[in-house]
Image (cartoon, rainbow, N blue to C red):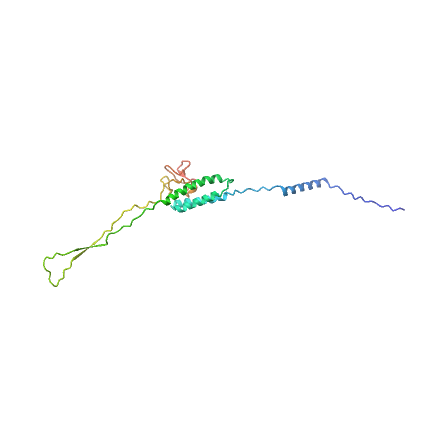
Length: 220
């Protein structure tokens, strides 16, 4: 009897449709993750310099309150240096240009204060401490031979000469702010330049601290 050889089919079974769809979706997600550009929140490079300039301006305002004009001028100069580092594409650039001009005016004002001559106080210069007035005793008759004639010496205490000098003026405070001491303009101060808050405002208000005219300055 002849031998019969059974042939086995080697044809591969087709992949189910749901598996093929899942594979395509996985590949698509992988491609997006690898090649789609990632967007990150941009950081404004000028914000740090802006905050630093505000802190320096606050220090300068405190120096003005205590009449330390050299410190105030130096702090404003450093604040301007920080503002100049803000790039032109920053949202703080336009405000920085305004502050540079504003702080420049304050530096000029502080420099005028520095250049003002200090009042000179002249110490009292007393005259001679003791004046000796010698009055000779007139000879009326011949004194005895054993008595020596001595002139009378009168000591007069000198009165010191008092030189009146004008007392140096105290810190210059504007009358529109009776409850705190704030110097008059120039320069034009903002609420951010001083430490006082919610103080009484009356009169002309040269710094315009009371924007709503309710008699209270720098309410916030």
